[in-house]
Length: 380
Image (cartoon, rainbow, N blue to C red; front, side, top):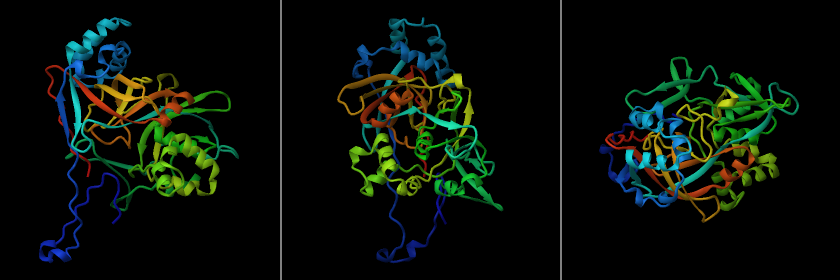
């Protein structure tokens, strides 16, 4: 049986009846990651005393109304006058407690990457140039919520009465126009389409100059696999070259190897068209704020919460210390101390995002008097 992402498969064997040295059982799985939330003072947060908090408060206001545990803090935030830095500081320091996030696997440090909203050229109709479809959600994709677990879903398709894995990236691309999903638009570059899916949202610039904004709608249920890591393991590039820019350069020089390389990531994202004026929409269903929205692992960090981040700028030792808002999630954002920094829209933001792979620390700011969120169970 082939496994699928978030699948629940239980294997039972009569291993106890077999001599230990002959036992065919797989070794036990390592313990699942756990989190500790350690109380800190604001003075313990590096750079806190000089951080600009008024823009952070505006980002917090963008999503706090959607989270019940933040309701009282959200009401108080609305009373802070726009542009009043001192009032913003007083708001956070009198209504929240900072908790250091500590992982059982990585301690108090983890990986911080970046993402952005790309702008790619495209068309409403297929043609000799625009040959690659940007798909909406296919009608045969089945999504099953698992009530006994938190924030877990199965995705697949029906084969009679059986739910089987949905098509992988390679299978979807092989079908081309024969794939049964609606097409939102067409683009000329499969690599740009690939990175549009990794970012989860973007804009399509049409020949007329009009722009379409597309956002994440669903996913095929297969796990995300890093293309950069695959190319490094295959000896196609060095680790320090495995940025978005490096991968695009490799693809341009190796068109005959491109499709096989793309297929190493079986995950495939389907889109929906969004109102152009709203901005890219995150997992909290609110517009993202450039350089103040963060994608997190929602098992450990509640969406909507303020998160203080201490890291460095891409390819630099310059400190990047900022109060962010947890507005988004991502298929590759897995872990207690793991974050994706939203840089904004367009090529300049993409240049920053593509180079960002820094170590960082995170502090969850949680309202005084509210019980800490209970961590969700880890996915199998």
